[in-house]
Length: 226
Image 1 (cartoon, rainbow, N blue to C red):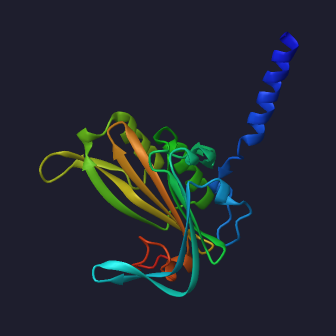
Image 2 (image 1 turned 180 degrees about the horizontal axis):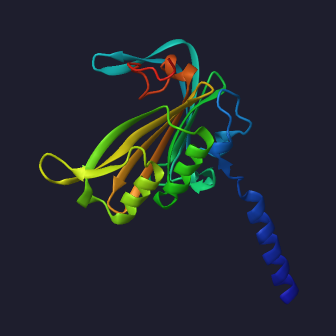
Image 3 (image 1 turned 90 degrees about the horizontal axis):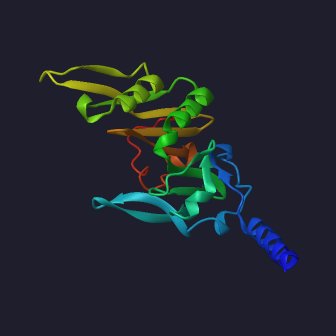
């Protein structure tokens, strides 16, 4: 009886291991190249888009000029199979990975707030000084000492705590920070909330940006690639 139970347990472990998907680390993917992994079995949804995005009557429309876009969406459950330099993807936001004419061209995701500091350090170590930063401010009393310290340690060149014109303490921080490397834009958005620092990263290629195939990047007022 014990031998049968042991055999059953071993079989269950083998089957579970066989069914478990390999974790995809977005930091290891190469943009402007074909994907070397089939995302169809990973994604929650796969949507095909024929054409680029144009502004129309205050909204937008898709105009087909031969562009082939495939959008892979990862919801709460499926996002567990994704990482960013080892950091877990936040299940509440999930992730989207998009190909354009069969090349990896866009990704957007957030990491778990507990791993924000490490993810910021990864970007700074890999890309160096940001090419641009948009500084915002927030009431100092809205942030914990931990969050303020994280902002200051991550971006000391942009962090500032001072009294505003109304004699209230405020904190300057880089709300949006960008790097452009090898025709790829890395756009980091930070959202400090009380005791946490939320991290959202968009990655988009120059081709996808200038051809306006990604919703949200279809109004090219300021081109970071120029």
